[in-house]
Picture 1 (cartoon, rainbow, N blue to C red):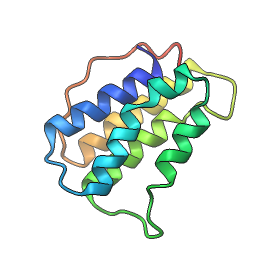
Picture 2 (cartoon, one colour; picture 1 turned 30 degrees about the vertical axis):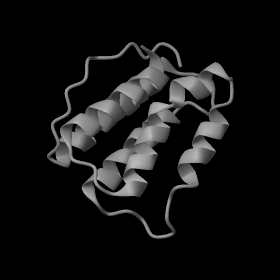
Picture 3 (cartoon, helix red, strand yellow; picture 1 turned 135 degrees about the vertical axis):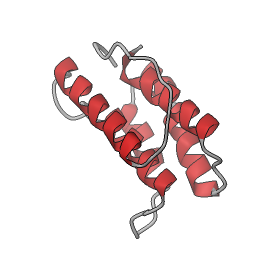
Picture 4 (cartoon, rainbow, N blue to C red; picture 1 turned 180 degrees about the horizontal axis):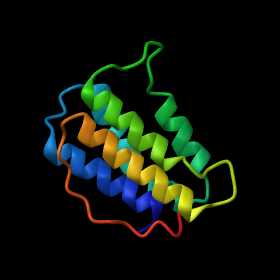
Length: 116
């Protein structure tokens, strides 16, 4: 499945699990879901910029805001270094733990994180 498809799946699962009413959160989740498309055009930095351009100056303390940012953070875990499957697995485990800590139950299959 890879990191990009995992980000897409996780974002879709969050939108199916939690009622997302805030327009900014909806936009952020839509951008996250587009990560595979940005990979196909070979420019994940555009995806990163698209997401970061939606952030406000103040940190979003809402549960959805925190989870959305955690998904984004997972998505870019290997962007500025040599790709490491071990790092991706660690970051995915941290994402799952964080979501559980936020008391949100998201069902997602264990991904293959051997590639983007």
